Length: 355
Image (cartoon, rainbow, N blue to C red):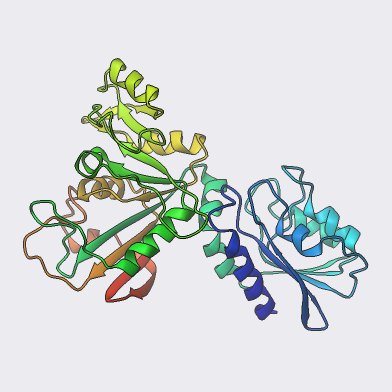
């Protein structure tokens, strides 16, 4: 069974970056230990994986359907997949994981079983959940899934004392970061980064790309009106920004979100709620040390991706600043840690441990 579900997971990943805010789903049809059809959710609002796999085929009683996510049983942008499966004659369905969406959440499996279809659940469940961790988090919490990413030297510096950071990591690491950018809804930096670098904060990959929405923390309205990202940007600010600056930014195409001021800074918890209301389901935080420290202090980070380059700087800037923990037993822990290499760089990825 697992080999067919692995293939369904491979298919699901083909939709990465183009189906948000929907989950990645793949499906395969198997007869006599042979895959006879495949499908995945290709585009937001388009056919679901099961529909693309089944197509116009009928009389499939001797066929097993392997699908990475519980078939939907409600009317949304498309009809329920459970109805198609029942009509097709399929009598055996293998599901990797249940759908956390309250509109489904076990109901799809029960409907199939009520129609005499054998349903097995839990094949490669962990792999399927990780693949859809953004969707799973957002559908439950209605707030963005936050990935904190930075590149540092072997002695833990993200730049020299003068602020020079180009480039700490190598080409392969930077290419991978753009692959991550493609799967998130937003990419967040502090206003100092925009003032210093005037970045585009887009995705630079060959072929078709999706681009995250730039999000800039700017509590007082210091972002230059000539910034290249303004026409796509969300500027998160406070009442310390003047109304005239707000109007000028909106005239440039920016969306201005105002939160209350916490010691002159944007209220990050309020910002996460507002971004959730905008269907921003995920954020890649690429800020400096102060931004990273603030997100960690508020317990808003879910995943960390730290690239470590084999370089030594000595004095320099730390990737996390302003977070003052006094004892080692207060340290923020990561679990489910994985290590990857990109050329000479090491990438450490893990999830913030929450009690």
